[in-house]
Image (tube, rainbow, N blue to C red; front, top):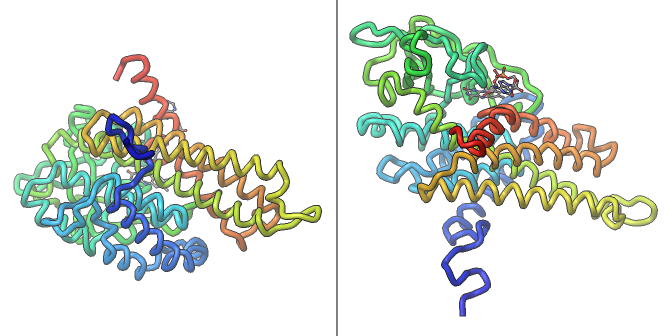
Length: 392
Ligand SMILES: Cc1cc2nc3c(=O)[nH]c(=O)nc-3n(C[C@H](O)[C@H](O)[C@H](O)COP(=O)(O)OP(=O)(O)OC[C@H]3O[C@@H](n4cnc5c(N)ncnc54)[C@H](O)[C@@H]3O)c2cc1C
């Protein structure tokens, strides 16, 4: 007889974790609760992620989760990266996005398109000590990313990059930047090339740090490239094929943003549940009023649905099956319900929910970014609709 958790066809429930996945999830959960939680409010107020927590995330292996052990990483899976991002986001979505960019964009791109020499040079540092950024967006190129104008000129022995990048996560602390530039704006997306820019390169500068609504502890900065000299061996992938690097990494990265938003919604639900048990009105805990129970039940359904979409997309990706539409659905849905759950949590807390003395107002602010970065909600709908109409 198959056990309750096994079907006769060998399929297993999406949320059933392997022993390794469960142990990993538990270790991230403990770290988030014990080490990050005490500092969340202060980091949000100051707009700074504590350097010692970043060092601890490296030490715990959270910055090279699916990097093979031979390159200094943990040898895990993309799914485990998503699990880590989800767990961190229940406590602090800023910590989650730091881990997201490092693992699902930068490490991912290097593993897929890096030469052996590039992997040996960069991955061990990325897994253990060097934070990285992924720099695609510009003032005039967000959703329309390939309208970017940062120009790369071939100087014979090196490339010269000139332009400005905007909204770059991790940039304040990062030592390595994946910078997308065009070798010829006239060629459209076919001119786009990805460069590995190291912080000390001449002509490279990290500019203004944004003062944001949410995920305030995660740095978001402008990058200024003024005749920045990049060695020829620092091109990632082929010249003119940077668009593939961008599209394919973002297709995967957005699954993890779905994970971040699911974790945020789970965090909001946990806070709401605990408050509903202790706050009394009309002679009993508010959780005993059916109106509040219905709100909590709705949140739980939404979190579960988002998690299923996210886990499905991540497991499809790890098993090398098509996942692009599922990834867009996961990010679209999870960021939508994250906003709703955080909003409901604020209301369940009543007046105090609107103050900074309780954690839900921060989650409400943090939720907004889910519908904007790594492709806005409209851009996810474009992907889904193209697939539906057979145009992808
Ligand atoms: C906190 C933060 C962190 C970020 N981190 C990074 C990072 O690390 N690296 C990086 O490269 N970028 C990053 N970004 C940039 C982010 O990816 C872009 O802001 C996002 O893609 C949207 O681009 P935009 O801001 O130019 O908005 P626009 O593209 O100008 O969009 C404005 C509005 O128009 C809508 N719209 C645009 N085109 C269409 C269309 N064809 N159909 C329907 N609606 C449309 C959009 O959905 C949106 O609602 C970050 C942004 C923020 C705020």
